[in-house]
Image (tube, rainbow over all chains, first blue to last red; front, side):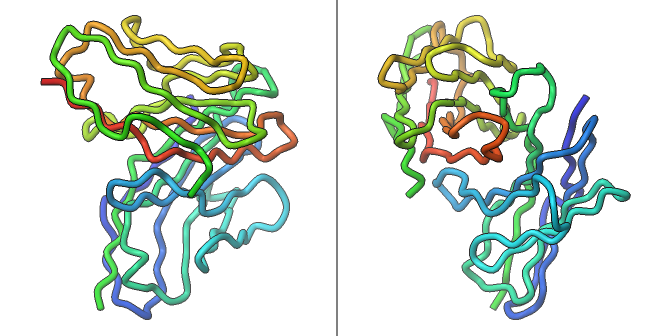
Length: 118
Length: 115
């Protein structure tokens, strides 16, 4: 079965420091991977995705993610954290089952709360 | 703003009742997905429609049903509501098609409280 794991419930960093939010996945075949951010009382906002190509993917708000096939990881990173980055972050993988090219349901990790302190 | 709209934002109802949640996808998107977010279950996929047809089903209870209309808006119907159905329900849309990369754009959600 396909799955995503976010091993940390919460990550705390100081403003201006680099941040990493970890994600590992388990899929059969090549994964389609995504990061979303959820602010309080808001919907999920798409940050970035990995489909194929460069292992380092750049996304919105200065975030990037590194795809590592050998470690089955897709960690989210940012060189310098902002207090406004504090939110709930979700890693997701596209479900590759079903065989239909128009099925794109996402399987989400449990989420990691990022707390950036001034 | 993702371009996906959901109504209502909040819904409070009693056990045993039936409610309908509505979603309008982004212009041009053919796929609509419904997800349930709760504290104990996290984000769970419920059901997907593509251009009016059901494409995939997840952990959706038999008391729940959905449809996508010719104008591509979708409705999620929840009946015989139980306290455990209290959750945030999200709709998401995407263009669909394997070549499109499949990022989904989420609406603001409907918070359902069953009392």
